[in-house]
Length: 601
Image 1 (cartoon, one colour):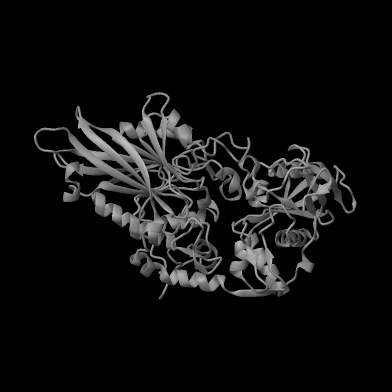
Image 2 (tube, rainbow, N blue to C red):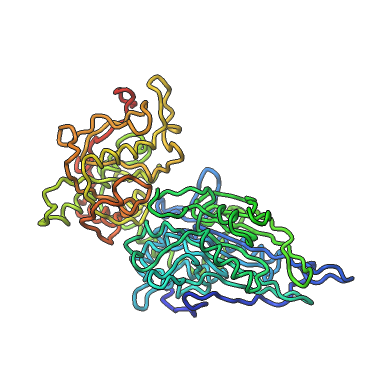
């Protein structure tokens, strides 16, 4: 089946402007109760707003890393093909003209499918393909999508190419042009829903994205875009939308509800601010929540100024759930008023793939399956991340070795060539495995699941020590005589696995019997105690280099080199060049967990 090549679709809005859409005419018989009742009773209207978030390139219920149908212990199913079936069901139940379909961002990054159409067969190329996510979401009939932080991972050119291929606006009220401070993307969309015998119901959707973009994708956005806080921009735009006649205001926010941030004090804004927006900004009826990858069927937040309830919902990521906001309105005193909002979730595992989406994108899917199954080398033994959270695993040493080699080669002949190179890497996945025998691109991609690139920074020995202490906060303090349960040993204070780092080139112990901040023991370099004044070149991924995880010193450290090639690609190149993946070429025992000097394992 031939792939769909680029057919740029008409943009639904000019950059920086809102978008006004008009809904269909009167509701069908199935929703007759939503029209004007007889006998002079109050006019009512029922609206259903559907929402997804954090799709991350999932079109089908397929695990490209395992080359098989996706399956997990909970029985979840993934992909827009399933969402399409659910959406059709809801539209049949409620009446197509009484529904709205939104997404809260992180759309074009996260699977080999998404990577393939950003880097291998890029949508930015002349006569390039139409992105599979644009094709699927156009076919399903999305009305608007908020920008997520991962939309910027491949640069603004790729994002703009994707935007041009979409038949719906990409919203970002707090994504501003750095020079003019005006919105660089449409801030909102307004849709009118007609009701017989009454004025139309006007529904405004405000899109908000994550201020962390300024950190995580600094290389792409610095000097070009700024990202103020969600609360600030919502307070600016919601009154405008109400003054424009909006009867209902829905926010699609790529921001969680916890009120926390993972970037420390580098940005004076809250990362997970959706509940703050509900509390602080009057005039909002519902918020579709994204970014946090958690399932929230319904969360009710009371606005501090009005006392009104704002309903929030976050569907599970990867198209595993669909949120439904059922909004009831009544026409009183010459205007529509929201009477109630209720949120619920529908599960993608309850339906089959929509054959329309399967037919549309089977060619693209097949191309990516062929790509990820290319053989690039041979492994002498099986390598796995199963114990990598608490034991120094050779498979993570592969990452640090590749990073060290790339940085050393890049700095050869420079003033930094004589400095020792060390590297960080995280145990991203608990299930990644490179089997003995043939090694494919999908094996290596499962090891490094993010599209991070490589940066070289200058750190002192003292700064490296502080970095390691911060990383060691990942472990739960465990007394020397206590039983060790590996399932409860990590993720202290909800620290995710990707915010725990190995650091290569050093030797050290992590004493988990000690309190956080005093756990690093016997830290040596070259067989001697680490000199706090020693300078190192630190090979680090761009997420960490820009402050992701709020590790100390690294974000402000001097940068001596960086590149745009993904670390995943560098690993594939390294294995391809070696032809044989042998742990003797990269594995080393750099660290171990102890309790009062006694090894835990």
